[in-house]
Amino acid sequence: MTSIASPPATDADLDAVFAPIYADIATGAVEREIDRRLAHDEVRRLREARFGALRVPVENGGFGASVRQLFRQLIELAAAESNLPQALRVHFVFVEDQLLAEAGAGRERWLRALSEGTLIGNAITEPGVGAVDRYATRLTRAGDGWVLNGTKYYSTGSLYADHILVAADRDGERVGLLVAADAEGVRQHDDWDGFGQRLTASGTTEFTEVAVAEEQILGPGYGVAGPTYSTAYLQLVQLAVLAGIAQRAERDTREWVARRRRGYTHSAADLPRHDPLVQQVIGRLSAAAFSARANVLAVADLLDEVLAAGARDESALVALELASAQAQLAVIDTVLPATSELFEVGGASLTAEGLRLDRHWRNARTISVHNPAIQKARAVGDHLLNGTELPFAWSAGERAAAQEPAK
Image (cartoon, rainbow, N blue to C red; front, side, top):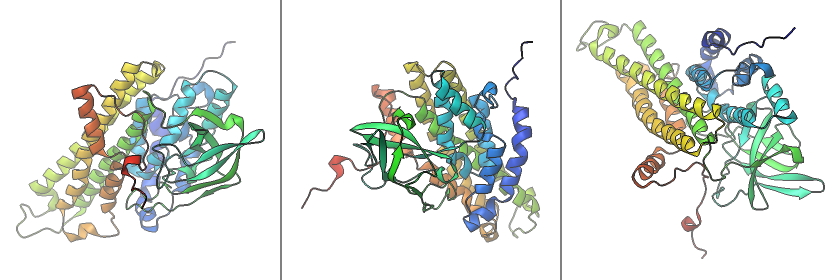
């Protein structure tokens, strides 16, 4: 008898699995923020529910979700805990890379591992001089294998991960490789000191004489020039985080106003929820959340089309990159003012530490500077006016012209 494969999960199926988990995660969000407690238990819940396998095909043990469905879930997760989608963003790009890879034992092995809960973190960006020219993190030959040495920062999500995707220099070539998070010579530090997104595990990772086998080397690494889907994908995860922040900010503010009885003698109504000025703020917050969500899902639809076609059409990749850049500018300009304006609905009690409503602005401000919007706006304008290529891949560090001359 021929077996019939199960169909991919619907939105209702995914909501039934994950909505209760999001609700539990949201319950402890303020306490985690106050205590600066990394979300290991929350990641464990997601791992057990196979959240990381949303895009893995059903036949490989996953949910078979579309890109749009994935980003719909990322927005909901961000509304519960904005740190977690950011911590998982390289994981989901790794999943896409496997889906686009040639059929074979390696692809099947990784898809099965992902469906069983394996999570991928990253160690790409370097501190100090950085990788504008080449990575200081080096992969060098050692007998029949290789050894990895170097230091990375912004290692987002790696403290939650089983494997770390590392970008390194090998004889002048940028390569990507996978290293087990618990491999000998790997040291991770939770030393991210930003004022927002504090629980993303975005600190330092040190690699000291880490043994690397040939099969762990994936090929050309991040920063290699040329049109790719991955920069738009990575950016879109950040925007999903912003959309989720806006959604949670609106909900938290609305619930606070609904309970509020104190007002002012010169207020337009006895209760804040009846005050038309307060109602206006809530209306604008809801519009910001709606707009951010709509932008994310619109780009996700384009991403679905590009990936379904194999991510090979250069004109489609350029259109996708342009859309993600335009959405970045629109979402940031929508969400940042909203997470500040929410404080207009009440007095000083709205700033109480126990509420931590300031975390919404701090988290939104922090996620928004990862790829500076002013640089993206200039790139978009230059592309539209002059046909200049969009920056599909870039590195942060010191450019030669900016370095001080030796004295």
